[in-house]
Image 1 (cartoon, rainbow, N blue to C red):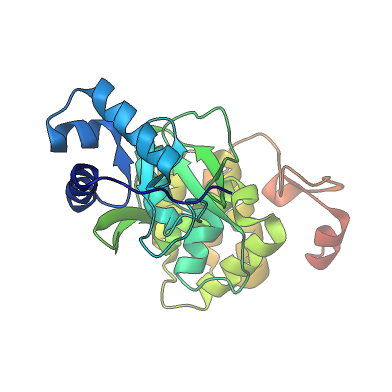
Image 2 (cartoon, rainbow, N blue to C red):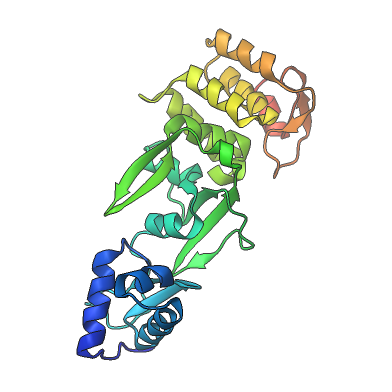
Length: 270
């Protein structure tokens, strides 16, 4: 673990200018523009500062400033949401990360869920001590989002209804169908409950399996919502899906065209 080395007066001044002119992260393009340098010169300067421990590299061409009180540059990212916004943009925070944000789960997850229109090779990168779970969505799927301020940076996060729909589309971003069902039950009991919005988002997303999973869980936790249940059945696609793609589907619930594990079938009288 290297210690932080000293910087000269000019370098300190330049670093201060860059920190004041950026929001959480520093790119080569940021530094070049702020100091009026070429990108090549800015890249070499940031690389030199990283070697001295004044900035910490989080990916190629992107750095974060090291807090003045730190004795080494090996520090965790201060706010993973800001890093996600800069590294994976256009993107939003979703899945269990959004569920935590909206108070829909009491579980604590170690990684941060990011949904992005980019297609990174590494779907579970670790950046400065924080693990990210990255999922790709189409550009037209960037709806149902709220903007929140994290310091000086505006970051998008899925609203409560979109959070539920994303989890029903891909249960793995909610930790699997069991925690997803807990989030859904909490959603139904919360101030955010708005079934017409759920149905609208499901239709916009265009994943046929969502209506099957949504109908199945609605039947279990809110059987009185007959209109919404009928809407789910009317919107189902003809194929069969799994309740959770990562679990074995032992029993077919024919009314929902859904393969479910044996214990789920027994609980629902399948």
